[in-house]
Length: 351
Image: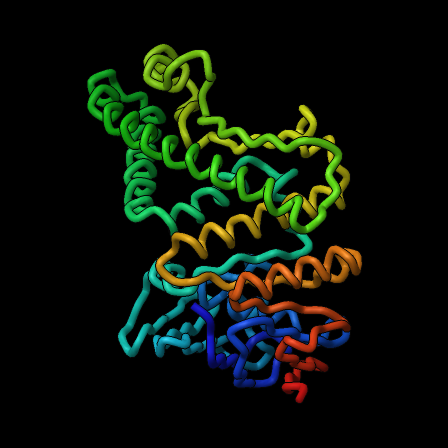
């Protein structure tokens, strides 16, 4: 669901500001260091409860301010607000206190594409697990509960293994461990197939030149030649020696190949960024089709990642998608966009 009013206060170098964005393309233009990305960071903070630029929340809070606050009103009238201090935070949704980040995330589904997005391709498996899990959180009712159940029994099994727990304890835990693992793997595999189809379409639509055919395969965190049940039983003593569960969906990966070779090594950094962008936009399309509320796109500095032809195709695609998007750039823009000029932390609409 798009934002119709946005208030940012105490955020990095930005002066207090209230913005009236369009439900379509919003273009934040200004020199480097002006504060453009901080606007995206504020929206991300409201939706996810954290920054995508730093793990240190104090880095978001403006010098001399006690907290950073972001308040927004969606076009359906829903009002959301969050205030972050260094050691605590508080949130409100439609006038009621809310301390669950998941409630903010559900009401503000968004996709972020930024210069480090290539880590989705060449980063650790955890990056790709989180990508699938985040999509499933929005499109599959009950997935959050299934994920939480698995995470809980995984913690319990690991604690028992670390303590050298006897077989009776592990026998009691493993049925739920296996059943919740099977559910996560089933849903993740289906989501991976959906992503693969969307990426194939987007690569062609946007004209992204990649050196071969893409292949996406979900690897469930255990060897394919045996079931997880057999592996857990066979390697229980080894797990006990190491003090943790070595196999399961917590070790899963979305394996990506291009022309039969690992995309992380086969593709150049520029090609990895194109592939990662395609994956994020594929997620945007899937959210638009199945999420409870339409998603937003945050696109940080695409001019530095795409040439003029590819950027034009991307902007054409965004206009056809009819979703709210926020784009930062040092120049450029479109006649159809709502323009904001950002300089030295001050934002003003361009009429």
